[in-house]
Image (cartoon, rainbow, N blue to C red; front, side, top):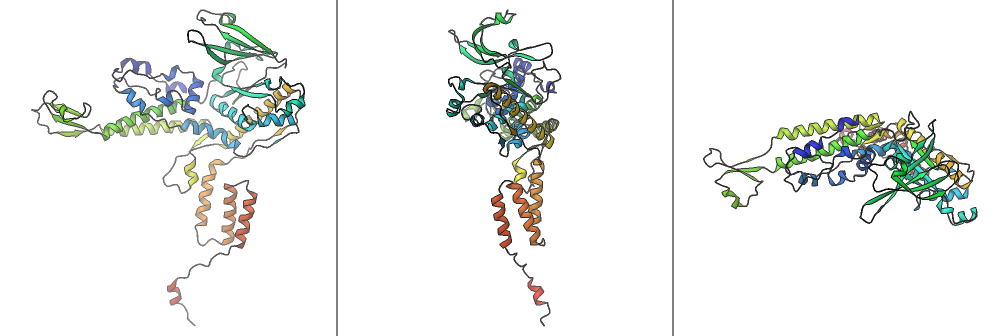
Length: 489
């Protein structure tokens, strides 16, 4: 489906008049697909500076329009809806290992705890359909004993590698599809000429090897013609300390990088980005009318009217000076097209297990305004299962590095009803507004409403129940006419 959202930018660049200090668009079709998805999520690169705005073949002021562009990030809301509810409550882990406790509190270095790290991995699994977790043990190399490692809070640590950082030149499988080695981008350094030289790290079951990419590799065919070995570090684990996490297991084990299923969503948001820019430009032209006046040889330019603010016509014309503006039907058509694209984005999100909720001005609940996308329960259950698999894999690597045997239990939530929260909240509010509802029924609703909003606050719930028991329902006001007409005897 991603092919449906390609842009004819090459043709636009060739035909657009270069009168706006030079066109500076970037063709999004030339960007790595995994990177484009990440950019759409974080609003970087062409989404941030507007260079993914596609110029029209007859456009004269592209850069001005690009600079005023604004990206509405629906894509991020959709992706976050797929995994964030799994981490809404505190994740409880049961284990009896003090070294693992050190690791749990600082799994990713820089005081990144395990829950936060797993959440980040889950995010990239949802974005890219795959994510890679590497566990290293440099923190423990300087300590002789386990006790020293615990005392100095030195445990193995994990870090993430993304799909676009994989280098297939150094990635190999056996005949049965078992991964024998995997290679990732490590860092880059500038050479004497100021050119970036890339370094890559390859992992196998015995060691990690750092390779430097040679400068002239256009005609290179073999691995040794492309890369130079810089260093080797042996870990002798008997297993590659890399965890490959998929959203869905690929049909072939050698299919390390699956086709990113969220690319269509990212590109649809890119289409909306372009449509919003075009719509804004038409609206501005509609709002700032152009003055038409009779003139001879530009005589009206002395009036201080800009060359883009008026149009001169021959003085012998029968027309009178007037203001003109663009056809309002064009703005209406762009708005309708934008709405159609938004509906397509919501439809594609549905295919990914996320429901789009249209915000309504008539909504009574603040919760109805708070979220626009909700993942279906089955989607969140699958995300919880992935999070548990991530932790299980991390524990296995931890045991390999430390020779520990951690007894470990972890359970992520599986009961999700996020798309009903606003609806239930509204029902509770409407019921509480009814005067004829008995107090015992209202008290029950207040309690259920409290549980809905504060599911873990047992102390607050007890305080509310006590307050409700002590509260006496006020008597209903009596109609004065009823008193006057009643029986006075």
